[in-house]
Amino acid sequence: MQGTSLISWMAWTWQTAAFFAFIIACLVAMTVWELRSPGGAERHGILGLETTRGDRLFISLLGSAFIFLAWLGFFGIPLWAPLVIALVYAFVIFRWA
Image (tube, rainbow, N blue to C red; front, side, top):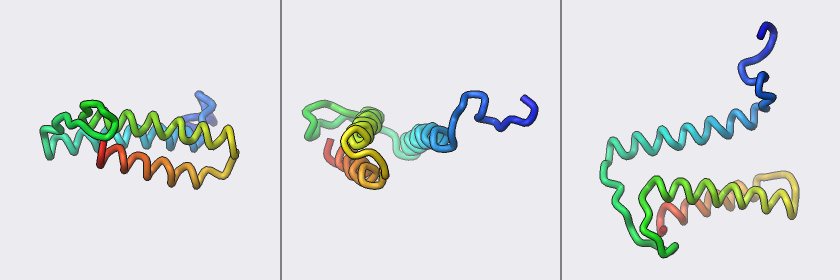
């Protein structure tokens, strides 16, 4: 692997590496949150489901992926607008779901 960067063997771009770093950071943050404030008890929210913190993280990440894919399908780039929509969506999921 002489002369190659750390992520080039998988043909990753820096954006792909940043995405996976964000997912790992979310998981680490959720772990720290649970260790500092245990008991993320289930609650019944606007989705009609009993959800925990981890469930809400998964739902927000999955929904955000669909928001970005739909935006790319209908409008293309730039992706600043779906980022704002995804952040608002994640806030709503964590607050009221």
